[in-house]
Image: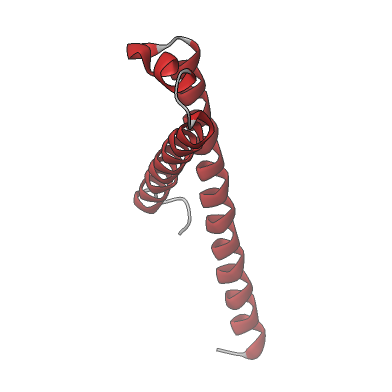
Length: 94
């Protein structure tokens, strides 16, 4: 294999790598947004009186931060993991 072919293969692998990285970040961001929307719906519609309990709490900002961060991380990781799994089983990158 000559130097030109090796360089072309290296560039192809690097492009595929950055394509995967962009996809993972993009899907994690979508999951974070979905998590934020779920928290907003949970608090706005006062599901199971969680919004009322937080509103009457002395530490409501801390509880909202914990709720938002938990939902965002969970949904973000679920979306990123699902995207990785689906892309790994597809045959488009070959």
